[in-house]
Amino acid sequence: MDFDEVLEEIGEFGRYQIITYLLICLPVLFSAANSLTYVFTAGVPNYRCLVPGCDDETNPRYLTPWVPEAVPPAEKDNELGASTEYKPDQCHMYTPDSNVTNMSCPLGHFSRNTAKCDAWLYEDSEHTIVGEWNITCLDNQWKLSLVGTVHFAGILMGSMVFGLLADTFGRKAVFLFCILLMSVSGVAQAAAPDYVTFQLFVFINALGTAGVYPLAFILGVELVGTQKREMSGVLLNYFYAVGEAAVGLVAWLTKSWVAIQLAVSAPPAMFILYYWCIPESIRWLLAKRKNREAAKIVKMAAQVNGAVLSDRLLSAFDDDNTKQRKVEEAESIDEIQGISKTVVQICKSKKLLLRSLNLFYNWAANAFVYYGLSVNSTSLSGNKYLNFALVCLVEIPGYTLAWVAMNRWGRRKPLAASLLLCTATCLAALFVPQDMNRVVVLLFLTGKLGITSSFAILVVYTTELYPTAMRSIGVGASSTVGRVGAMLAPFAPLLGVYLPSLSLLLFASVSFIAGVLALLLPETLGARLPDTVEELVAL
Image (tube, rainbow, N blue to C red; front, side, top):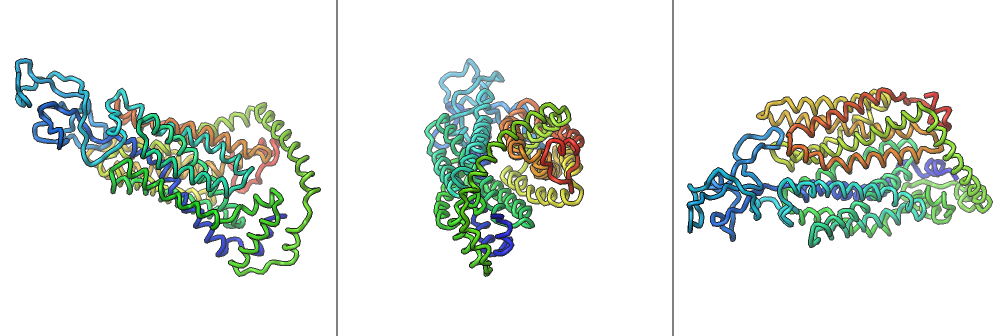
């Protein structure tokens, strides 16, 4: 049975699909939020050495008039466009003069010699895992970056596992399991007693998070007609961007990593009610020959949409598919053999092999810069919570730009232009004077808009540059390489410790190379999707 024929009768995007689609989009908000909480839970708050005898241990204050005398200033300010006002060093303090004895706080008698401290005082306004487990100073900085890397490692694993499970056990069941896993493990992060346990739950949380967005996308797209699929995918990305931005708002209001985790992880548990509220994918049911279950959903959709089903359609659900199933089992064996043959053909073709490597680099570069800019946004001067939210919300016009550009100018030129736009803005931000903070933020937002647009185009482009026999494998392999790029992104801010401009210079270089390589790809606008390697070579 062709489900597109069913949609012609019940409506491509009627009331039933709209309600179901909106319900599916709500968990995506929390999935997006969970994907970026590490930016603030593992963020570095303001802290300095606890000066024995000077600091009130019961009610310490981060900045007092005597602090500059006891604590040296930071060697360099790592914030982009930040002011040069005094900021205490995080890990060193001045030592008292050797002739000072029996003084609780020897102000006026501190030498210019420094010593590394073994106790820290944190600014009251923000509480992260840095203060929770004293993950301080440069020698521990990698532990904070590793939180993001572990998260993306979980995303990589979850994307592969739950995609296969969804094809076997159904979209709905795996979708709900992923939501519940994301919720429980996210709450468990807030209760973690130590860093290692916290990282374990970060990985488990990422496993669940990895399944929510793609399965929501599949459930949504498989429910609507051909003319509405592109629109439904774009709208889902809008929800994702809002969910990301919400993390900045929650962090701004709470300034506590525990509160952030609970706020974005506890509410999704209520989506277990979706077991009774959303339908299974009708396309999956039909593919698995579960026609009676599919018929119930189709009849309900028709009733809500006010449509009348034809007798021909209703009778089609009662067809005996035993013989057809045997034919498909034989065809699936031929399909596997065909995939193997296609992979060998592509590897033997220098042209197609280089094209695949081009796509792999573009996926890695896009993911690295996309997530790197999100993480690095908290290093901008001004309100870091607002900056983070804006960097996330700018994805909405980014996705819209990609949508319009693909339909008007194709794939290749808009992809290259988006990447080069990101390159130009990242480079321009390096030369803007430090007192022009708003200009730096505007350039940063423009860069994020460019990389968002290029990423959206790349997803569509990749599906059009592989033959039918291995299209899913090609997109999956490209996405896997992209996850590796995302795993490296959390370490980008660490470069700012050595040179404040190094991370932006790296983003510009990576996106520039990707933009140049994109120009080597063939244009696919209006071209027929290639079914064979021969058709692919002809592009």
